[in-house]
Image (cartoon, rainbow, N blue to C red; front, side):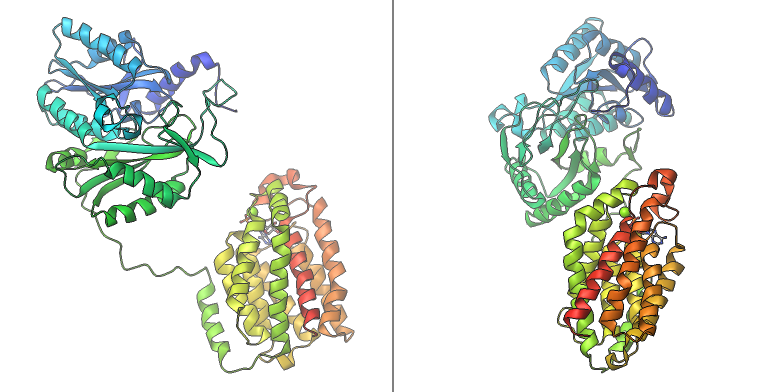
Length: 581
Ligand code: ADP
Ligand code: MG
């Protein structure tokens, strides 16, 4: 496991130093203690809210220190509670005389260490109380709800505490609102893979590739059970059902919703999950209020996520809405932008396809397709079959100098092209154009734009009627398509791109057509020149596209696009032949 790390033993100190120096506009280190405190603390007359726990959970807990949220955070080592002494020192530093509220997850180390600090402060006459976060419904049954651990739902507890303290509530009131918030929040989660402590080589635990852990803690504590990995919608259904089964008594239909990534999960996956969650909440008659999707409590690099529901009432809503300004969370006040799905759901069109589409509609007008139209459809199907077989090989070639997506993009594009011409019986010109537009819309990436434009341009370059298509017409259309592709991509022969296959192929096709060969023979005669062009890219240095950033390092690998386009040309030849053109 590779980490950005100096000596493992210095990790916590260096992390805090970097954090505090980056975010000096919100907070500063507590002198002589392992923690940070908000600028402007101690704030006279205000209760101070002190959060904390082990590290490895960022943005919990110290990411939430700032105005309107936590006054201070005590920072322990990775997954390790801070000591009682540290908790005491940090609390002492922010004590403004109005009292201290400790709030943190219900873990025995934290309970003991913050507890020692609490006892010591109380002995000194400081008013202090503690609210434990116990939102993880899967960590103990409802009859033992106070034994539950604290996970992502702690965010709502801390936010309520911080907002109550910031507006000047008394310690009793801050405590009461914080307890109320904790009583109204429920969380359940799943993990897909374990996490690795910096400085160690092995994850703390493993999850088999086809399994997931349900109800896993944020320190690698075992989950309640192991299940088969499921699609997002089934995970959403399971977690929503689990949480709704524990709906707090006397609640209404407004719920704040938080999807929390555990550290190794992409935001995009969380959005997929939320898409399923929101439908289920709708069905249950609940209104999602200001959903939050992101990382709130992580567990190093663990993959997986949790769902928290926070049943709101007027008090909790105003605490949640209150302004806050911290490195990890900002609220600019009550949300005035709540809107429902807008009507502007029109599907987006690909770049440059609008006028092409208009053209395509124009070409539709009553020209019967002939034999070559059928050949082109066979050619596109053949190209799809060929490129599907090569998908991973093309990905590997692209990965050597680019980003590895070339095979996937070509397959996506060709599938869309073949789908678009399914059942179509128009001319070759129309078929290339339809297929090209679909390709361009679906494939994406540099090659999606380029190959899509190339296919469309081949169509545009062909005569209106199939009967007028001969080898010379095809060669001319391919020349025009190459110009279009080069106009778009600005690549010249020798730049290590698909142009290096296409340019010699086109030249050879023109020669063959000039010799009076029929389409399929001229095409076959031109293929060796394309193959030689493709192979010539091995020794080239890339000057176009992503790979061009690598300079000399791009030498030695055959260009992915030059390879795929050669195999497309080869497959087209088979398609033309099969249909007897
Ligand atoms: P992306 O670079 O967006 O990931 P792909 O991986 O699908 O796109 O395609 C990469 C291939 O596209 C390259 O191997 C090269 O042949 C071709 N390519 C990239 N840029 C250009 C360009 N400007 N002109 C011609 N071909 C290009
Ligand atoms: Mg790529």
